[in-house]
Image 1 (spheres, rainbow, N blue to C red):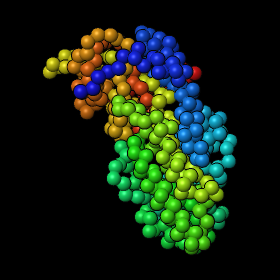
Image 2 (image 1 turned 45 degrees about the vertical axis):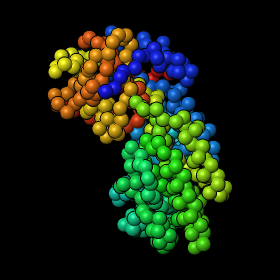
Image 3 (image 1 turned 180 degrees about the vertical axis):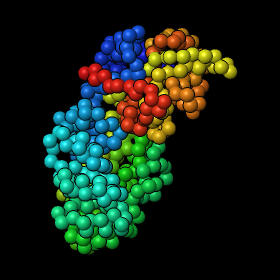
Image 4 (image 1 turned 90 degrees about the horizontal axis):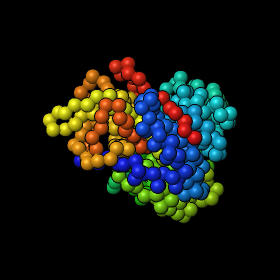
Amino acid sequence: MTHSVQFSALEQSARQRGVDTDLIRELLNRKDLQTPVMLLSRREIGRNFDALRKALPRVNIHYAVKPNNHEVMISEVFNRGGNYDVCSAGEIQTVSKTGLDPATLIHSHPIKSIPEFDFAVGRGVRIFVVDNVEEIKKLRRYDRKLKILVRFRINTNSSAVVNLQYKYGCRPQDVLPYARMIEETGHEFYGLCFHIGSQCIYPENYVKAIMAAHRLIQKLDLSGFNTRLLDIGGGFPVQYAEPVPPVDEFCKPIARALDRHIRPGIKIASEPGRYISATPVTLICSVIGKALRDGKIWYYLDDGLYSTFSGIVYDHCQYPVVTSKEGTGRLSVLAGPTCDSFDVMYDGLMLPEHQVGDKLMFMSTGAYCAVSGSNFNALKRPEYLVIE
């Protein structure tokens, strides 16, 4: 059973972060507001970027474009001196609008189709990731010298919510042979990378991976390979329904491990996506229907699992439900607007009674929500409203 949150309970902490809560309250209560709508805060993007950079002072931030490619997200990262992690031709085109040098991007996808690979090289991208022999063979296509990172995986006792080591990453013992193969193709072995997973709440997993990288770098040194870059991935946690440690506390053991195990001459990069993009976006929905079914109040919203709430399915998230209504909680269900019975987001939610036309707010819906949704039933997708 999940309880909704009163908007008034969020106001104090939100104001401390500089959020315009008066505007949000006004929007939440406005009868003429066209919903669904996603409120996007420039300030929150900047706060997240600055907080992570402060927590990991040695690390260059390459924002992972995949969770949210909105132009405001891209421009705010660029304006703060950030760079990007890209995985496709579309993402390269998106970030190229900033005017940055494509050679500074990190193309982190370990598997690239030939057309995608050709496009990236043709646009001037130079840093790529591999984790298998077949991908290394593709390097022979290119005369222009590329900088190649080898992605490895480690065993962990605890997994992230989204385990990104399941699909990608070679065994540590494969790294040295792959480095030799890269050099044989005429390209440069440039470094190592790993990605523990998305929404990882265990900093010890990063520490373990950094220690593994240290051992690999020592072996590479002995074989004459110069490691220039270590990419520690992303996955830093965001608070949804369950609390997570503040980013400075979470990153302390990671920063210590980097200082202790990775020599100063090696550049360090990270690919945060969720941490930068999740909290700047707030979804507002309207109740478009209401029914009493099997002892529960069913509320039908104008957004659902096939659209913004797709993150519940694909990203395993439960977004905090916020209401401006006061009163005793009633056992409730929140369902989406499509004709599919699968389209149910919350079942067993304690919520003050609402009426058709009332609005609900859902926090931290900036990561993966919009990009993984669809317009199933040809229903309206939410538009962004930049609020500051």
